[in-house]
Length: 520
Ligand code: SIN
Image (cartoon, rainbow, N blue to C red):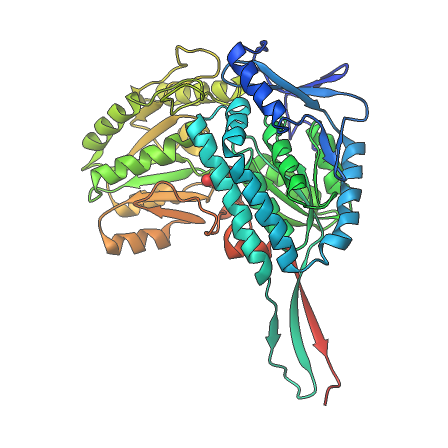
């Protein structure tokens, strides 16, 4: 299964460098330099891959530049790995599995707990690293560290609770047992929008039940993954249990898919790539978990509390500058509250401070790259050309680069591009509706089914609408729904499986039925 031109459309290889980002490159300013030197001296700025517990350069010496999306500064050059390094990482994980899977749940729990403690001890530095390579405001980045670490704490606790079953037998001289065993080597392919949390949400449960992993972080944000791996080593997680390879995404992806030693692929990212991975995993019949794109409706009913609806909608739309799979993508507002809501929402959005994530008071950082801005621009233009109105923002920010103004567009129709696909940027399209039935019909009229939100003061409506929405996650009078204790995942083409919570552990186990006979 060739993933070429799917994992990274813009990949071109020039001599010893791999280039991925489309931001004009710049040298570091003194401010950035001092953050980078602090991170270097703390040992958290790693630039090599991790294979079998050893920091390793690409075998052919190639590197990729990592940019600060807020400025285009080159922060570091990291190893640009491919097939050979991936095969070695898989072998290391395979060898380490023999030992790691035999430890007791409590021994694995202790290592995960130490890793959690180290992440929390280094939360400011890790937050700085996230802001440097991903762009989100520092406070939000430090918040991601807490969120990411919470999966390790939760699964450290769950490591001791991978329970099996005893089933009453149909015959008197037989006993029927069910064991849960680790699936084996796991390939975790993770995105740039949450450079830490999407790793820990996969690796936490995998390690807890005895699997070993090969992580392939996004080429845009490998530094956080490498820093987390450094802390995993420090926490006593044995060599080979956790490996990191990054660089040539198609080559790495194909090697992971082709290997018979890799028994599970877990991926967070676009639906298009998820489908390719699912098809590619068929050859070796791997277990697959996919957390793919959403097209989240956020419904504001006439009977909603305006303040609660405003706060919740702002939070779900503008978190991470609109770059999450659970960000509201379509805001459906009932006609009785339409004018009041859109005017208050537009005012609130005009107050959102945009800028470099390190600057005081900034709540909206840059988008990840130029391609992301162009996508947002084309969606907005399409909506305007079909009759929608810009109520706030609507263009690139005067800061330049990849900054885009927080935007609200009114009179959007559900057949416009912006309502059909994920905009993945700070743009809130508003659709007017009349009845609850109409809102549910519009909300469900999509192939996606990850998160949905609605605001109402009616208890009856809360149950009715929650049950009618074809979504894996529903926020009622709440815009921020992500937590380590609840199952995260989607219906329809938004994915397969669930992450986080007690359900997240099942994704990494095989069920073994043992029939013991002749006991009479
Ligand atoms: C995602 O965007 O894929 C994850 C968002 C979250 O965990 O809240």
